[in-house]
Length: 396
Image (cartoon, rainbow, N blue to C red; front, side, top):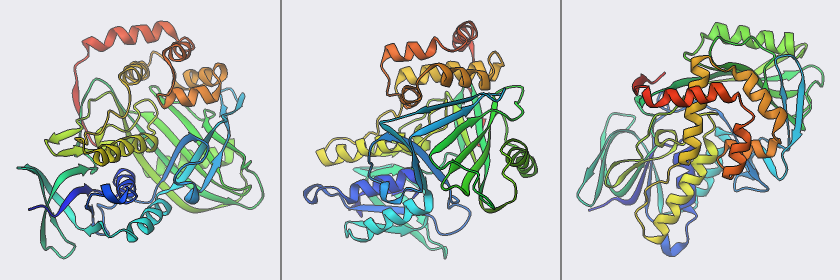
């Protein structure tokens, strides 16, 4: 006997996005849904910010923190590159706002039940899967579902030829005077010291003339200490941006693996992985939210049509191959990340480059973008890849 048609394990971006889509399914095709989320504590992800781009309005516009249509990149020498991205809009959403938005929708639907419990195991059984969990007071809980979608972070990353970490620390700042241009995002500001391998940049998301999220980000092999992040942000906000007096109203920290590992999308006949655990993170950029939307949209459509709901590969084989080359080139030190991205934004329209980074360009456009990178170092990295062993990488 089943407790639900669908069980969703985890209530981050992927779990909530799938629950939202299933909650809004046509009445005749609505599956019964259990959404498992851990009790308050260390297993709940901290508040965070997600950014993505899409043309025109989207389903979450009502809870966006901000949206922009102009991007800036600053080269290491201080040259400013600025471009519009219409018809795209670069959007920012806070996880707390997204959770509240989805929660309001779920509360109106009696076919979706939220279960506060820590899932310990998910096992395939005849006709579906069994979830064993434990409530906040220690009571065991068991449920069965025809299909299970597991978005919990992996304990360790799959074996890969190259793995870098995108790690960052950000301050939400409020300045004493108007210093930000709320019409423009500083997507990559390379006027910061660069590591020997990988790259580092500042990132500024202004929400008003006096408020912004300011982050220091690195692509490298290991995270920094909290003290090192704070020092880097202090240098950036005062020495580079010249913000003057400001207060820090909130902070956020994150580590995103950027890897050419192969992520399994199915772990049992009725158990699937979604979100970052299912490979939704784009290896070359760390962006995940847009791929999660494509993934969960396809799953919801498959369930509505009565098909096996295997989540689609979040990124095309061509995109993954190009990302593997770039990661190898950065990790080997053959190319400087700041120089590569500065050249791309200098020579490729920002709207096309964003479509490229989202895997939405044609082959001819991909070749055009590739021709604007250091060709010989990239070709040497292509030659490297078949010889490189895939090694496990512990989750940071």
